[in-house]
Image 1 (cartoon, one colour):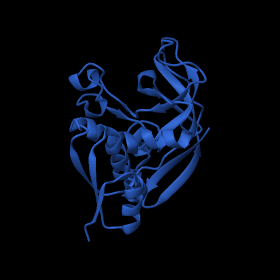
Image 2: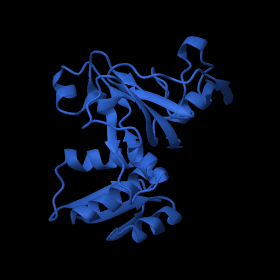
Image 3: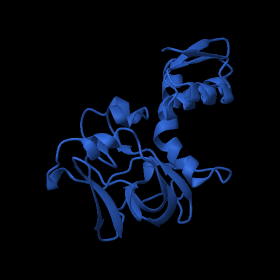
Image 4: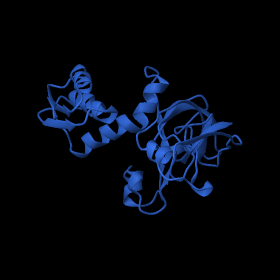
Length: 217
């Protein structure tokens, strides 16, 4: 398969890799869309990376299940499922892993796509089956890729503050994550104040349902 890696200092390389095969509790997805997160730019434009630091980039994955491991339960995945990927794995036994917050695992955390696990800027991606989230047929693969990181990050933030319909929330910054927070907060029923320094971003926030917009410049 072909895959994209970042070498730092602006270096991008298209490489050939062997097609992955799943372990017992893993799946291989055929990547249909892979988003470019702002944090990927640290790997692209940061210091030169050694060969041991280089992995396949892309932690906003969305695709179709191609292969399943021997112990993957039918309730977890079938070949042909349309899926998003929550791009973290952990020790699976600590309080964070057991409560669904694997990104906070202090023990054996794997981050697929840019840190220490291969990601989705490739034809295929291998991940644990428990990281999959079914993608509804009504949503495109590009939308699924956005949800996998940026929109998911916004949703997690609103869940952390236990946002309710009688709340007012200010969202500072109306980039992809901020706009997602604005849109989702309105879906929760809250009153939303969108803050940014770019008039075009604020116009988008208004279109996404913001009750008030403030240009912080």
